[in-house]
Image (cartoon, rainbow, N blue to C red; front, side):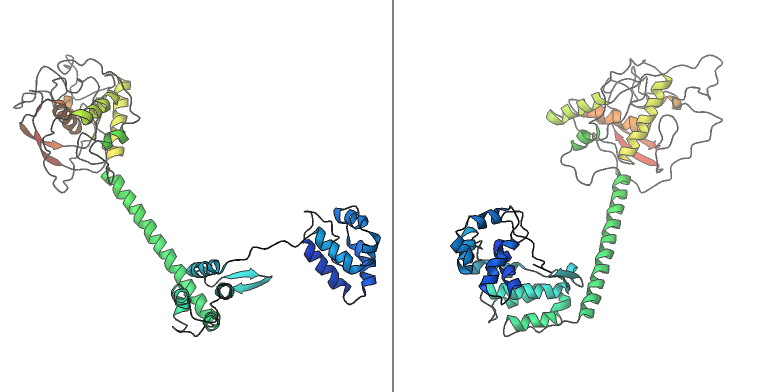
Length: 428
């Protein structure tokens, strides 16, 4: 065994080669030596104490002395593995399904320890499949295979061939520099297209956030379900019937607690730059059934904070969160708005202009000072909610200017002067 690279045979699953391969390699090492030498050397190629060694020792002495009998006994102990042969139809199916992809062009694969271009690997495989399908001598399936080739290769080969050998030889002989240059152009174009698609997706996301609405809604009330899932239920504090009167001697232009009152010495609020006009707000029709139930649930989930410093701060944050969620959109039943602290609950007969009870703004009947008026968005939301929850609509119209700031003077975002038709004070 001097210089032998053949590992001793054990005869079980620990062997790295099959029993048949072991026997063939043993015979190659023996070369043209006589059978007597093979008989004498065979035991030296068996792993001591292994299954094969035990088997060999148990053989009859006459069998061990004759090489032909030893070889026959070996094959009886370790019969060849029966390999399942592919049917012709299986070769045909695989032949039709094997495709050379554009993304694989200009690359290499390792085959039997050597690097081979992918189009050559494809051609070699197709040659074996064509032989297995028994079509190698004709033209069957060649048209289909050629049609599936990348244009880089297809443009460089003829359109007709006499047999598979001619077709596959033409594929193998396509200039590799032509393939590499074409593959590089394809990859650059794919990268450019991917960058364009990414940019389009980014712009679409920006537009969607700016518009503040989903591209598609499953139903008129789906926005309420999606936007108010995490809102909390809180009973509003009892609201006074009129706005508070400033104490005698108090400076009517100052407000220590915020709350939306003006301050003569604070920076003046600039009016919003006019944008493209919007359509007048439409009369909200009363809701019934499931939409009405969903609206009531949505109203109940919005916390109306008490009229305290902490409550006003929480309300200001609610307004900012609302604008981040919805942006500059028209008010509707799908955009429930947080109520100002200290004002009446929704649909309580309150004045939409100031949020107090005991009067309405019908025919300008509300004389609340401007610092006590609700933001335009809350006025619209109270009107919409009241109309939606009524048994039937009424019809009174008003015109107002919208300012996209919260009750505490903080701007929401893009400015816009809005002059809209408002249907019905709704609480007359």
